[in-house]
Length: 386
Image (cartoon, rainbow, N blue to C red; front, side, top):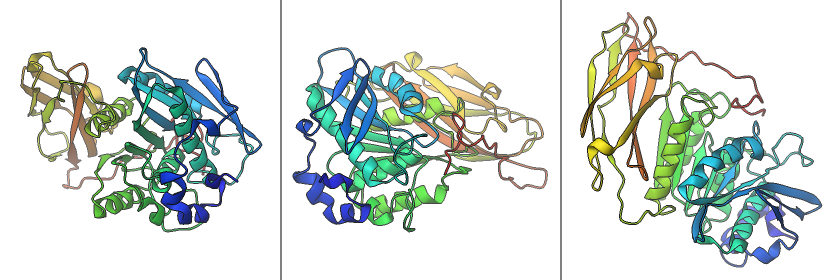
């Protein structure tokens, strides 16, 4: 019997014995793998497992990333859309179909299930069999239910992933749910980037804060980035999608998944968090960019906002050139609330993203909570069905 398909409590007991040594990724384990263009499939435990595989041009060896979709998405939708961009960074991208996809033949195996852990591990075996992948530079990323599966896998197989990304995911002390338990997440050794919207109506932000605390207690590298006023759709929302991808790319460089030779990332220095009164006149905010190898004039600097209802992107004007730039922000008249402003600098190869929070107080001096736009459950970009 494949140990990865044992019940989750048994997996917790097997731990490193199952995955760290004897159960290392072995391409011969999947003898019936079929690859047809960008699609792959194989048979396991009476089911057809399928997904997508995108490879950069060249001979490699390449870094790689496993992209895990949520319950509201599918590999041909969410995962493949991300992969088409990520493959341009020079990574092999593999996108498995997880059991929480709509219409799956397997029920009750959502999120951090033994079956999903097994499928992610099988992706490592597929990558190992390609011959063009550097197995020491493989990352695992996931959104929502896919984030739950990512956390569970990295806790079960702590030596496999060079880095992890958790988008709108977290941990729990409850039993019998799709979210991974804290004792499993406490085994993670992979440096982990966490991104979360502060008004996520599907996965509560405190669950990712708990994951951050677990990693910090064990001195595992971790960065948690909050998007003020953003709901569960932050990786697909046009206002925040590019920023999420920029943060992931930066994390991959920081953790050695991507290793551009002879180049260092740009630097970005921003204002501190700022509070203004509603309808205050726009004031220029100073920022500084730099790069060791690239002239500041040649850096591409972009800006994004996490809560367009308060501060649309069109209401942010960037001025200046070279190292010294300014931002002029104009919140929507009469609106109060809080938004995260992200500034990204790129030298054409590497990116650096930094942020600060702009709070707009109402006439009484209070910063009200955001007006949450709740997408229809199951709709593309919306919260997954629970």
